[in-house]
Length: 363
Image: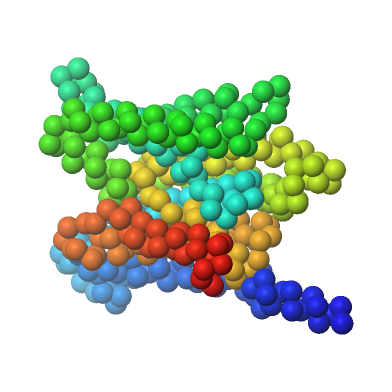
């Protein structure tokens, strides 16, 4: 009777047929490799699969004509940095969402709730307007380098302010952190709206396109900035996985289980802010990745963060790589902002999750 009761409970919870952890990660690796391969071959300048090995320098078959030179230029200067940036940004945003949901014990939590993205957007919009004004004309030549630096600085400053407000006597209130994040996000959005109001047509176009999200500015130096952050984030995620699992039971229970709850909060908040800030500094605001990816994986592999966090990184990389490929091909030779695609997919999914929590739909 006990065995039947446990089996029925698992079946009702949706985790009756969990695949093995190794199989899940292998499948996600294969999906990421497939998405990257498709992204390499399709685009405004299509590269047939037969010409791809020669363009990558794997072997030298074929004549070294203008088509090979063009393929190599497209791959190494444009497409490969962009694919790498999409995968890394997707991994960072998805892992940030998984950590936020574990920290708040709410599947609807998202990094955008704490205002980090809005702070980065305000700083980036200010950089666009400043470098295009008479005062900033001396640094206009380095506008492309100043934009990600400003976005990261804005995200970091937002995090410091939020942490200062929410922390008292060495303790961090998650509720105060969330409420302060909403307030600061509103202030940052008001500042961005003011900059949009005073911007000219060209500045307005740059601000709008950046705020909608785009990976068109991905370069190898930006990948060199993302890579160490991603590695450090992956290591930190593994170190806090057990604490997040125990935190689901409540803060008091987690404390009595040997978890340093305050330390876990500090690490999680700083980690989420750093990952989100770096992602925003590279591609602008891309929403709903942090909500959709962890929730989908919980339906398949369960809530254990030891597997959920690395799986979220892989699936986030797959999702954003595919979305970016679609964004640059669906209206080729023009490019659709990637934030439009992620919002078109994520917003209905978010509504379905809300309706599911109220018992109006089943998923």
